[in-house]
Image (cartoon, one colour):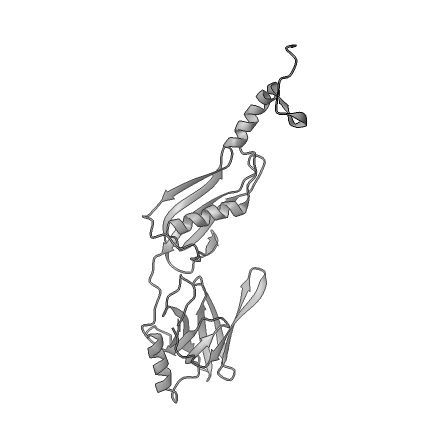
Length: 264
């Protein structure tokens, strides 16, 4: 056999000469070793892990988190020095959110994103993991006591007091409460569906305006961010909040409903 005669491994049209394998070996090793790297630097002891369905809002560096938070740690997702195989932002985000749930985070703030380029075809990012550092105001009245209050004061209830719905199964109770300066009523969650919300959590701050039947209302969203509006109750039954969702206008309408019995 001539020294130049190639020795093949494999069969048929897919066979590769051994000497060609030697040329491919460095590239095969490069492909095998490429990918993302993950580094986590703790700032505080991690808390209990959040369940998979726990909603963790994501903010960018230029956004203000609506609640006071403390930093748990920082996560860096990058790539090895030489990266040939591509990646996806979905994979990077999954790593981020899986880590956030594992560390017991309530909030994620992305501080930078590295897009694929000449050196790397993978995404990378830097993010801070936070947990809430305050106690959200909670109404002390129970759902059953609230229903009793509505029954006993039917003749003297303010038009805004009662049970309200945004069209979902969740219900919000509104009752007189002037324990905070500038507030006359509080709206609170009767049966929250999100695991990040609890029964009694404040859902609205409401103050009377000088005009009869008018109210200044602050409504707290699922991530505890706030929407505000001034409303003149139309037939004592509807409150609408307008807001911007990305590049689109959106609204939330609360409707006053009868008291479903019982509320749990």
